Amino acid sequence: MQIVTVNDVTIPHAAIAREVQNHQAGSPAIAWEQATRALVIRELLLQRACALDLVPEPRTEDGARETDEESLIRLLLEREVVTPKADDSVCRRYYDSNKARFRGPDLFEPAHILFKARRDDADAYAKAEAQAAAVLADLQRHPDRFDSLARSLSDCPSATEGGRLGQIVRGETTPEFETFLVVMEPGQICPTPVRTRYGVHVLRLDRGIAGETLPFEAVRARIASYLEERTWRRAVAQYITLMAGQARIAGFDLPAAASPLVQ
Image 1: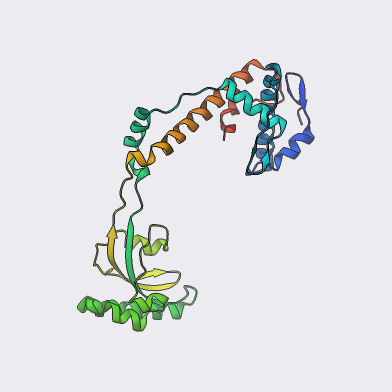
Image 2: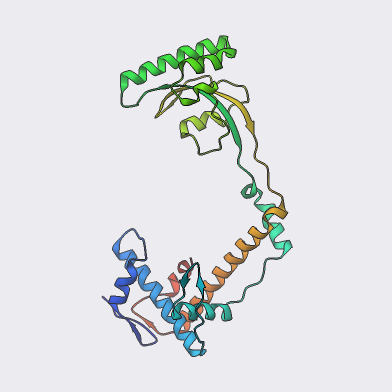
């Protein structure tokens, strides 16, 4: 393995080995690279803090106290990386361009009749499919019988409520169930049985409620925080790249890999 140095200060292999445990990666080689990068950047920052004669001022947050090195790095970045605040106009432009991010979830109120069966039990699943098809044919002629059929036939606890599942949002049901649910009209009975890992369902959508976009005032602080954090991370990445270009780093190529380190 190559010896890694930062301005003639060696980063021991043992230190890199200890740091590896803090990096989840697809291979040991990638984890080693990430650990080395983290320690090279740490050494760069600490050397700069020392050159500026900074004195550690450890903070305690949620019961955890900063180490002196963590404090020095924080103080250094607070001093040397200054970024603008996100004003109303910047936040408003982001809001107008990304309104889908601030939209509440669509709500659905479905009802179903479940014929429970495991997919790996071919005979039971075929029986459930036949039962669902028969009930669906009956409902096509008599849709008003859905509640009574759910109460008498459904294998779901919702049977006592006529098959009603209450309000749900995307992601709360199986993908197969949701695929049909999101394209149905309120009051519609799905024209085909819905097959899932739980069995076979006869599905009805009672009500759909479109999610509403939150007003700008309700999300302005969240937008400002996000934009300021994003700007700060980019500035730190640039700062590290600049310092790396001015330093003597041997055994590791930092400049091309500096930016991804800013998490």
